[in-house]
Length: 185
Length: 104
Image (cartoon, rainbow over all chains, first blue to last red; front, side, top):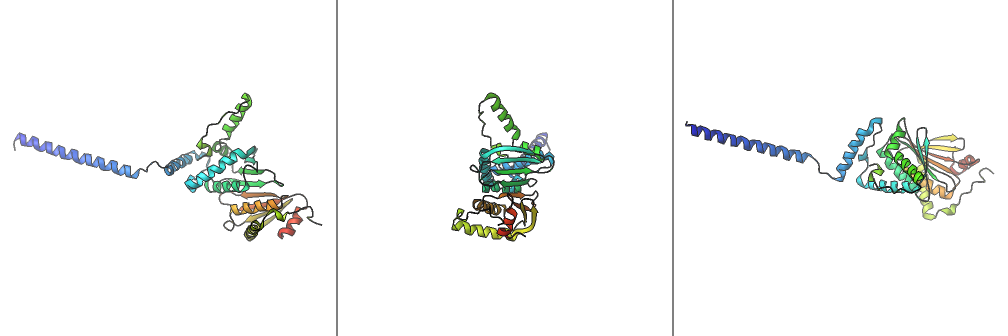
């Protein structure tokens, strides 16, 4: 075989190998893309869920997948009403108690929220109290050791305190930016 | 007379509400697994799966409309634990409850 034929054979062999390598690479990328889910709202919730799992250092784990997107939207609506209706917060030995104005949020709405919360974060002990003669509604969230820190973090109570303090110092109502994360998930 | 100070306004509910109230009351009564006597009332442990939290709340809402002198508490225990319904009130509420709800 002449040197020229030898060279030409090597070139063809190299080209074939390059084509095979490129095809393998393309196949790998295609397969990887197929396995990677699209960034949909459902996946965003799943991502948040994974983050929360990481955040569950205190062994308080909320399963965000226990509610559908529609149920989350509904819960968020009630949470907004609860936020407006909240008149007082009491620190308890093992949790917090929140007082609500009954004209701003109903018992059924609170029960609805508790029902969802129990599915998502089953480690809470929750109770709703209806005081006599049209008195206020109380929602208590309690649990084992560490639950208070969890509540403060998840419900952003420290931020609220800071805001209240700022308002008292400045004498102004500081506009709070609407933050979807306020509703936790 | 025992319970004479506790007046329930039956007109607080219309016919439809009253019918719904009776359905809920029946469901609640059939779900009671345990009754605890308290100093100022009674607590009822409800069998899970027999009555939902929303149904308990609905009953409380209706009862509160009719008999506003009760102090109600619905407690949901962690990890799918039992639901407790507690009714309390001022002195004399226990005999009233025994009479009204047949609590033993």
